[in-house]
Image (cartoon, rainbow, N blue to C red; front, side, top):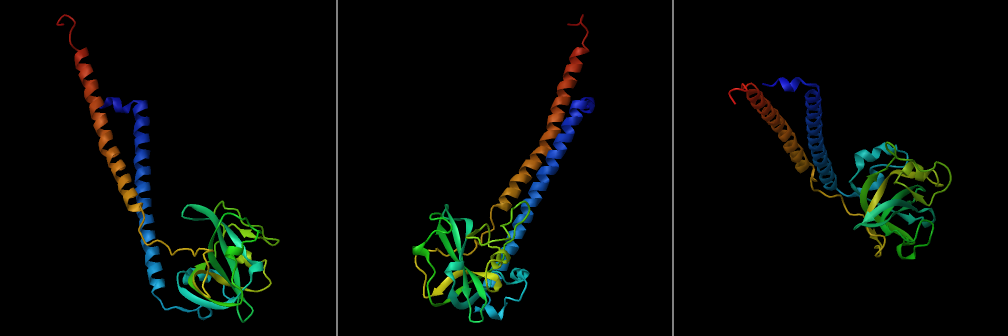
Length: 261
């Protein structure tokens, strides 16, 4: 009855359907893993945000490795110093409410001569790097900043790194090691995502919001892949059965003697 299923074209069909089922199963499991990763990341954010607000220099210093940011990210810390606007860089490719722009990353020089990079927030795409932005200029004099500790960002995979020589007005990412290379003072191994400042900030830059705490669409995507997989697992045998019946019916008709017809 199912002899047709051994024909070359049907063997190819079996293999393709099997590959499809394995691929869709893998996609579903991947979405489940992403959902679990998101839950863990959200739990980390909640735990870190619940810890007491402390001075940054009680957690780390410029002598620490950049990898320490992984252990401190999302903690709330304060730091006092004087902005160095001449050393400010813009982090490219940042959006706010679907509008293109930059992050203003400005060193805050502390009393010990080292500095903390402060992500003062988002500024619109125009004007460009190197051009004056008086409406978003850093305040003068001593300020106290409170915000979220963030880790340095380095190129991954096929991403291109920023040039390692020369002074840049803009960076592709908040790469603190690259930023420090163009400064005349040491930089802390983490940066602060500004939330509060005394004296207070103006309308620009717009502080970067805290991360979303939702679980994302990954679980619903996993369910969709599961439906697709079950459809293939159940539907393909039904197709084979229907073809088998069709061929069996044709065979029976072909066996009927001509005289009988």
